Image (cartoon, rainbow, N blue to C red; front, side, top):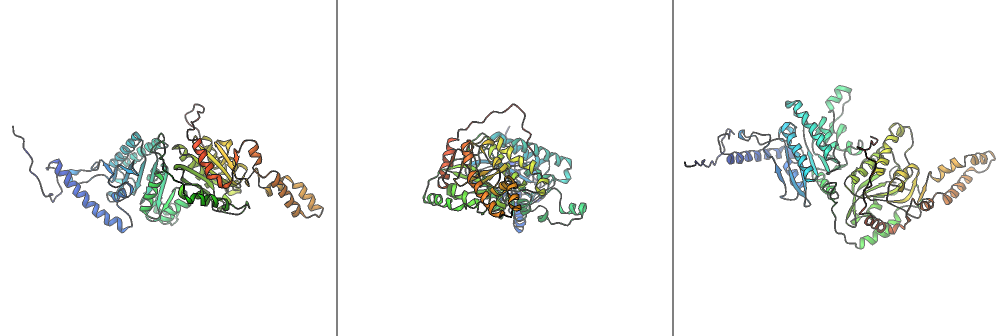
Length: 533
């Protein structure tokens, strides 16, 4: 019997029905329709200042490295339907494999239905199996109403798989359009959220629902825009100028993280140059002797790290603390520091959560932690107490107390009270602790301590008609000389050494090299700890 070869078809049927054509021709025609749809989507998205899903993938991955999975899954290509409203696949970022799912707003508003959920869950399973990071490009109208509970079920599955991946592979969410309702919890479960100044929104209930329920009139941006979540709620970890900036930030952050918790972080070559010597001399001039005088901690950090490159996380939120990634001698490190030019670097409810979250992120992926301390204590007042400073401040303790990565701490100027203990002290788990010679470590600052210790003496002086302020100044000076210094911490072993400011980078680099083979300690057998939440 002679096989029959189907005739070649050069034209696409005008009615879009390809059911009678060979598979090769059907796929070709479907791809043509998909390209046509992409052209239309490009016009609509560009008019809003947004890229299409595929343009975003071109920006995210190294050129030509993206390989798509299941392009036509969820569609009926025999009827000209190009596929589901999400693109999934793998590509390379700086040569390393990364998984991605990108919601396509041009198809059914990027809404999530059964097909989309299946594709995302399949991708997450593959990413976990392969041990590679996941980047989510979010631009969606939420659950597809037409599919009802079936769409909601897919969100539940994605939540569960995101939790399975948490702490094993890095997960980054870029909010590049709307993200509302239950959909917001997909990115909320990931490690980092990036939003843009325009077009980016996250909220559980939209403005219309808010107005109906409370009578409050609020815009999309006021309710859940990028600025709100980057500076007020702390939901977003970076506020990008535009989509290209958001995608570039994701690429940069991934360059400091390993592909998974069992892999080593990437290493980079570093050659010391003239700028290192300049930074070495400059660092000693940044921190004022006066403990109350402000300065910019990021200036200190840039003097300590390779090429002065410091990538902040949560830059606009809880600004009395600074956290972010950098390299020292080519090795990635997470940096936690107080910021003296914002509320004197004090710890409050927001900065406590900011620090705790970042320490946990670094510990999950084996990134060493460098802590730079200049803290006067916790922020006092009923507002903080009622906001849960006890519960939320305890998160810092839990994060440092459970961290297994190498930890190096340097006290630059002052470290008072409980804030000294929680900011990477040796007693809470840091491996190597240092202090600058002029640093002050004590339960209280001199003025506060004198007011308590010498309360009766000051009262007697007042009753005797003596100059109380002169006596107070003398007592403060005596306290600073005898007690308000780091000598006691050095004597009892809470500090390993006093170091000159100019030596700080070298000491840190040597310490991290010494600790690079640090082994994880084994605790009591348990399911998991019950950290304060």
